[in-house]
Image 1: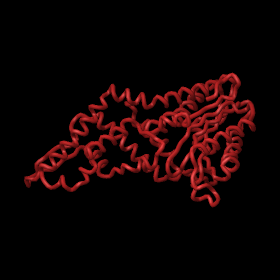
Image 2: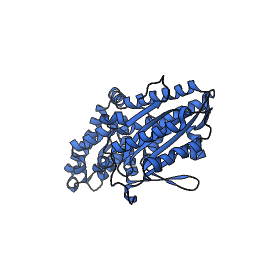
Image 3: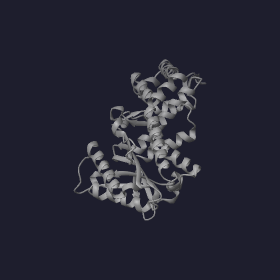
Image 4: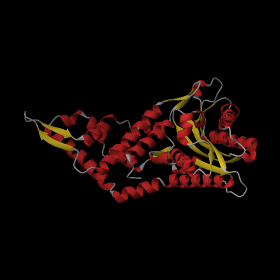
Amino acid sequence: MNKIDMATFAALGHECMKSTAFSEKGDTHYTLIATRDTEVVRHLIGIQRIGLAMINSIAPPFEWRVLKNGEGAIFKDTLGDWVFGLLTFLDREEFSESFPLHEFNPVSRRLLEMIDERQLIDKVRSPGWQISNDAKRSLMAELNRFVIDFREEFHQEELEARMKNYLARSTQIEQGLRSLISDAVERTPHIMAIRMDLAYKPLASLPDGPESLDLDEANSHRDELLMIAREYFGESLLSCAWKLEHCREKGYGFHMLFIFDGRKESDDLANARLISDVWDVRVTKDAGIHLCYNANDKVSETYGLGVISCSDTEALSHFTEQVVSSMARTDYFLKIRSELAEQAFGMASFNPKCHTT
């Protein structure tokens, strides 16, 4: 994962930002409305990019040069511009405010810790370093040392070890999802897949709604939805999986996957409408909102949703990889804290022979 290519990096960043946006339903499509938390994720992605650039750097990013007038100046290469810009504009409080339940990728987390330990924000933003050449050179040396120390701490083996440990839960989720899909495929020649995001309307917009919603209540709503879905669809519903998401502005929500027996169910939009109505109205008492991936032809095709022939290995592989990417690998940038891990992900195979987690 430390050698992640930029296309994958961008795709994971897009998924992460998308989870912080509200979905606004139009006549024929959904529009994602960015929140303040979306911008915070953008900043976090930028920090990760800077951290990886520091790890892969060779030369010091800051250089001392004497100008024609005899004055000295700090010159910066591209990485130097990124580091200096980060220290100039970084808001340390925004991350904990937007994502109080999360922990960050070890690269971003350690980068922020070292910035705090060395008080680099105060030093860069203080006008004192611009007073004399000695002060400028002192700051330049400290910034170069910061980059070098960070790079040395995250040498190849250490970065690999930290990332493997951080992503261990994502690996478990990925394995669980692959197993869940494989189990469904073994039980029917056709499956029907539905992907949805379930969330809540802004609480302030609900005239009779709660002023706040806690995790226990959100989990209770999810469990009630699954109970109703299982009762209504019966043996047609083969399995489901869910993943918790949370940010300051949207509050709690869930990424949901439903897998049906394609011999018994073939209208994914009808099933999705029923599930969304149960969530939006019955379970949440009109406080719920949803985003149905199947409702948009382009999105549905991208995620490989709808009815899939289990003998079509290409279609099945595409669907599986999209599920894994959107429900497991997006933890690359940030994830629910370890002490809440048991509430962060779950799945169920509705078969007496299968174990439910």
